[in-house]
Image 1: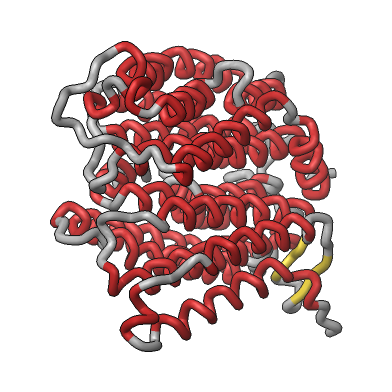
Image 2: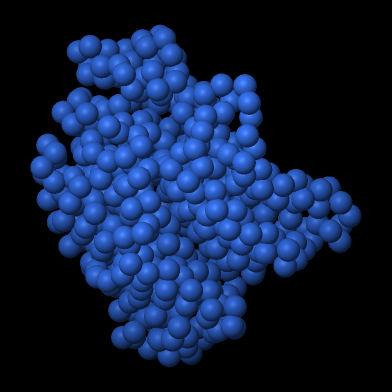
Length: 474
């Protein structure tokens, strides 16, 4: 087998970043306290490497690892998300200084695992990559100085993750027994109706449960709001975005097996409808901003299902585009949360009161992120939902799109509630002032531009996603 290292440049580069962080973590006490400016610069260079690698194609590692348009699209999204997360976490008030390097080491390891997951086309490879990305997060959740809530959130995430892992492994055994292969290229040729392959379909449903856990799809969502609330704001920003990309790319690859009308496809549609409805209704009564964003992610996991059940390249492309848009929208909101909570506290809605006077740029970024999550034009969320609804219509699940439209209307209340508090109410006198440094304002501005650009000029990104979806389906 001839191995071409150019096919896996993003993974190699990310591994080198991990190696440097590891060496720093075992160095002197002075080395372990501060990462320095090199890591944001290295993460920025990682974005360049990932973007340059878009278009690479090939099979390596005995055909278990596919480099294609889909994998490279998601690796670029992961690299962008990692860069923004590193910037956001570089000013983290609740992180003990002696744990700084270890913290970023685990972040980098998790992002690396997600990159590996993007190219996995064999079930064991996918499972190992998923666990590599997950184990790092198990350690990160609880890293919040003197916080019992963070310790509780870490325990919940580990225990629930162990259950999801057990379900996935149990399902894997059923798939292997029913289909006698773990390669997606062979599995896609099989008949995935329950009548033809009851054991394999049962196993795939269990295997998908592990992905649903990472995606926070109902009813595997129960960890999500509690973990967001307990983790630090900066850690929650990572957990709320990048692991979702890993779950979505796996679901896109698996969705190529399931035609509209299959039992397992209908199950995905039903879970999508339940997830978006439950997530939006639960978010209506929340007052903690991170819990609102937690239930919001449950709802958005449901929207993603529209693209996955359509059975068309356009549907898979829409799911890919929406995943990238969701990362941009959510990171924008979490950037504002992290900059407003200068002491690292959890924000309540009342903490946003008068933000337009205290930090106009942050208030504007919050409005852009909230409007985008609703799906209002000209934001990225609007184009993402338009692509999803258009791709999913007349493919057997029109009822799911109608439910998604109704849920979008419901979500307006709590998303615009964030903006209402920021723009129509006055702040109390004892509220700490937000971070209005150039670092804070430039970051908010660039993220706002990214969200607006994906909404105003989506064709280039969507065409790239469409080429990825077209490579998976005939």
